[in-house]
Length: 375
Image 1 (cartoon, rainbow, N blue to C red):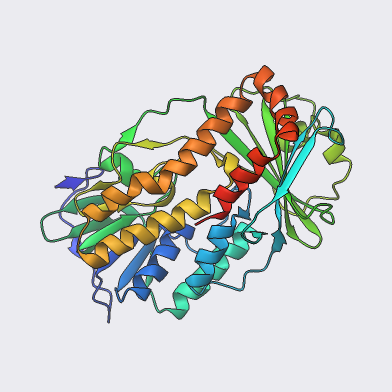
Image 2 (cartoon, helix red, strand yellow):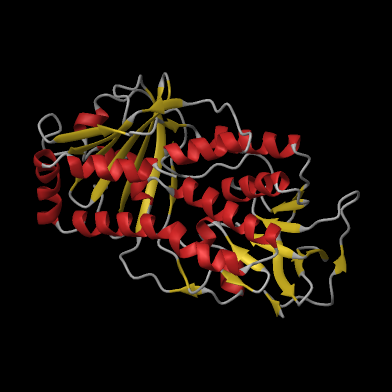
């Protein structure tokens, strides 16, 4: 079976000197690099293919949930430069001092870490594990009963018994294999920028306003990451010099505490991606490529690590069906919690009622953080 854009002629096999690849991994983001490390721990010989050389940045909230921190440590990644956070605080932007609910994780802290630092640490661990990383763009896939051939731009190809597609939210592999399904909810987008300021809270703060949220993540002793999530149709005041500044204008209590910018603004989205199946033959989707709903609960990295580990385990055991069976359980809690929170926060009336309800029943937030901290 061959999928991907039409290309003239047949590609010439590209041999990687000294390597007998047992697993191709398409994508050099956190999910792909972590899967390569997991494969090495299982005694497999992986090759990573990534079109974008160097340290890869991305617009994200940069808060690693406790299970992700533990999973990265188990892979030998780190120590990561960043700032621990003890839990989550939810704040109503209409009355930030009065309408505030906060709780800590019961199983240890999370970690606020710049995406650039996370990417650099993963790349260093992969280099130490002697995993080949090829800078090339994939243009198609062909698979048969014996293996998968990944065609590369420029005429070469790589072949191995299996391929993990960790090629992100806009995964070409997912599209080539016909596994995409339409999104069901409103298109949500995100903005992110860092500011020099001393973090004023040991927790990640989530501030709710009408139609958008502001996420504050401590990532260093002198730096806070500021991220916004909103429907793509959300109107922002046009007078500000940038979308970030326009969004900050709706949170004056936050803007007043921020120092000068510490990074350039970045954007991402729409986020929701659905799949009909996590696998097609010998190709397994992991990370964002395997489906995603929203960054609302900050579990994107954890999902990438969990799906990658499960896919590698299925490949190492020679039972690819294990991944099909594990996949629903890996995502069930995330989709349930994220979907439920989206349903509660989109209608203005429900959103206004949420924090007062959590103040009256704080065990609800404690239970949610217990679930986020398990893994």
